[in-house]
Length: 329
Image (cartoon, rainbow, N blue to C red):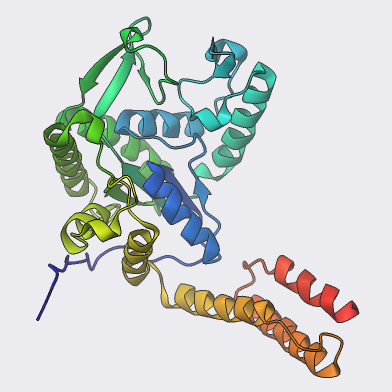
């Protein structure tokens, strides 16, 4: 008997190794996948603006990364005893403007240096509802709990998203023909909008992504994170206590499907070998001063050296330092 409705995974998704340059942006689902990629020895740049929810804020952020924009104090505003950027998450906010600018510009500079060398750009859209500042007409990425009267709230259309990203992707791909873009829709429901409005929002995102796939064959792809959680894991045990966000188990399940469809054989081998090394280092010996344990540590160092010879882009400095410290004890 089958107790679930399996989601068919795309067979044409690009496959990556730990040597590839990856940038993930969008909702907190992108943050979750980015953390798992880092654990798997990838070197992803994840949300240099912090969590972003709507497609227009994501595209604005990407354009700022391309141009290498640096923020100045006039780009910030002071509210509730802190300085904020309307384009950045509250993690960047501070009572001191200089501190905010330093946090923002360091992240922007790092991401700018990588943007034109990317192998994969993974964008996760959360909602089509946006907030426009009445004073400027600009869509903000974060309201920072300002009064709703400061903003006009509206819903993006499919054509608005497609037009914006057609222009953005055309420029990115022209400068970097090897670039692959993976689009996903966050499975997190925006219950504040109401369930019907949330469904309209997700449907708009899905329709826009479908058109972008058609417009950029071989460059733009869709990974069904939304469908995996809502159709295949159709059970509240796969949600956190708020009944909205996916549970850690659900995130791991979607991650396994991502690994299955997007990682190369070399990447899987590196993941397995890295896991073996970490398990070996977590082993607590009965006699850490014994020759037997020192030989055991020496074998770990040799295994790391063999992996580094085969995959020189891997960084095992932390693990080798642990081995050398224990060998001297």
